[in-house]
Image 1 (spheres, rainbow, N blue to C red):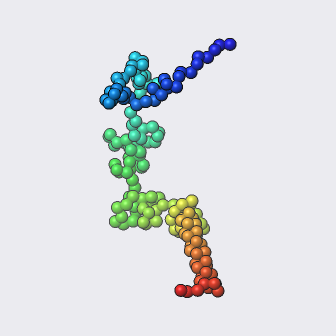
Image 2 (cartoon, rainbow, N blue to C red):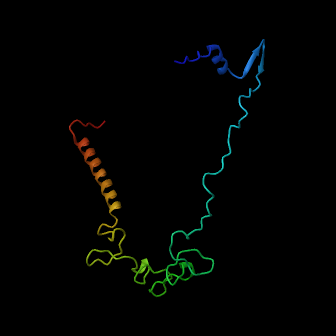
Image 3 (cartoon, one colour):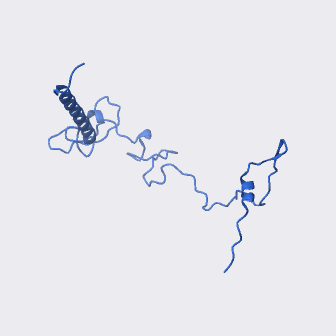
Length: 168
């Protein structure tokens, strides 16, 4: 069995914990730095991975590109992006907006129709218009806030109408 060396004396430990100033008589003398190792504290390592190629916007998603020279945007219609004539204008007379669907812009009835039978409104979300639950999250939020107000009103009315309540 190997014997372990005894721990250093407490005097040596307290010397390590003292500030870097030594007192000689009435004068404080700054101690010189003691070099413990010649190894640098920060080692420059070679990169683990090769450098990446610069990112080219729109190239990696695999979509069709605009056919205009130098343009890397996605093509919408006719092989061009909307900036270079790839959009379809709204069929409504004098309307400069781009068509969403069925040849009309949002203002003139373009977009997805509500999937509820006999409803001609535009769908907001989940294929439904606002009236049929397309804005359900906001509707739930409004209902929750209304319920909170109703509960608070009930609490106040019961508080003020109780026989224990006295106006001061």
